[in-house]
Amino acid sequence: GFKMGIVGLPNVGKSTLFNALTKTAAAQAANFPFCTIEPNVGEVAVPDARLDTLAGIAKSKQIVPTRMTFVDIAGLVKGASKGEGLGNQFLANIRECDAIAHVLRCFEDDDVTHVDGRVNPVEDADTIETELMLADLESVEKRLAGLSRKVRGGDKEAVQQERLLQAAQAALEAGKPARSVEVSDEDARAWKLLQLLTSKPILYVCNVSEAEAATGNAHSEAVAQMAAEQGAGAVVISAQIEEEIAQLDADEAKEFLDELGLDEPGLDRLIRAGYELLGLQTYFTVGPKEARAWTIREGTTAPKAAGVIHGDFERGFIRAETTAYDDYVSLGGEQGAKDAGKMRVEGKSYVVKDGDVMHFLFNA
Ligand code: GDP
Image 1 (cartoon, rainbow, N blue to C red):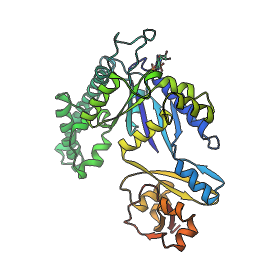
Image 2 (tube, rainbow, N blue to C red):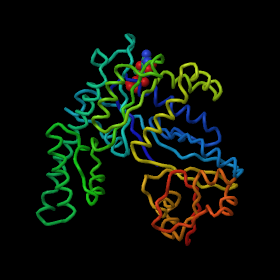
Image 3 (tube, protein in one colour):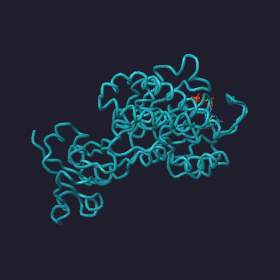
Image 4 (cartoon, helix red, strand yellow):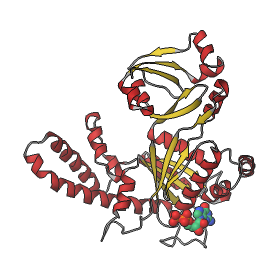
């Protein structure tokens, strides 16, 4: 599954948000076993109304949403990369993540201390980015030194790694994150394996006060502008609202959100923004036993999509019976779609579309 690491300076609302998200997710999907795997790791159901619609049509016994994992990564402060450096646990946590949700304090509250004594999310973002860039620079230099012998020996992989590390080094030394390096398709895999902290896509999460959740404020607008310049994502959320919603049942939560002028919980917005940032989409498998959602990247072919369910499905892939979500719903389900000629048989090169209802046929 896909993983989002939550980072930010101390006291910006990371833990409040993380705890609320995982609690809300657990409450919203009562029939699905959610767990907080470790104190700082939580799995969250990806809200998707289409799944309930499909389950209703197919009279599925069980509904299994797809999941996104959130990791609360504490430990970033100004100067963290100096001295003893960022902790190993911190580095390991963040390297494993597909994207970073960077929580920025956009609320004013004299009772909550800001580490730098003022609210300025754009500068805070810069502080964190600088720490991550310094950590990357250190790891790049170490790895370059470690590679030199293999490179001299003509090892092709090492030569490629060295070239990519040097590109990263040049960017970092110029004060730019590794994600500013343009990487060719041929290099994409090796680049990803370098797992540089500043190569991960960023979603800025503006934590605003309850009263400003629907509108945002001047701070969150400044963040949105910065995000646009960087090609990052940005969402406005109130951790406090999320904390309150986590205590309510679904009806109460809806009423509460209505009063605040919001049409959905922040969890939904956050996940949608994460999907957009990572280029993710959802396909479904639907039957009387269960209706289930699966996450893939845009552009994923049918065998690779099948592989998300099980490696055997990918290895033995023969073909996929595919029905578009809208056809499935308007034609009353699988049989209706089949009768109307809307259930397509697709082969290995088929690129799965968002909302496709899939049946995979494979050699065991
Ligand atoms: P972390 O250090 O980033 O994990 O921050 P916490 O989640 O522990 O929050 C730090 C403090 O800020 C706590 O006292 C929270 O109750 C408070 N806090 C978090 N979000 C908000 C918010 O949106 N508004 C206000 N006024 N306080 C908040």
